[in-house]
View 1: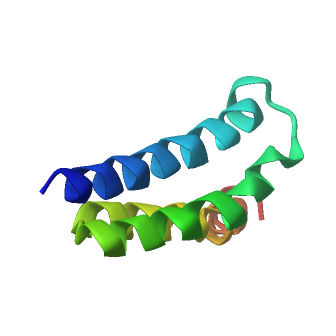
View 2: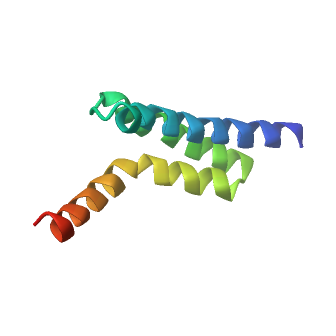
Length: 84
């Protein structure tokens, strides 16, 4: 049971790292390329979530892996509705 909790914790850590690499873009309002690490970190978090059988770990890391496409969609949607 102890190893199960380690996999879940590693999955959550990968999720939090995915959030942290996005923060410079929002806080400093400049497009840094750190967000590209989400394509490396969060798939590893998905694997950890599968090993730990954690639905939260899997789903949160999938969302963070696809976060660039989600933000791009929301940005274009906002631009089309309010600036177009």
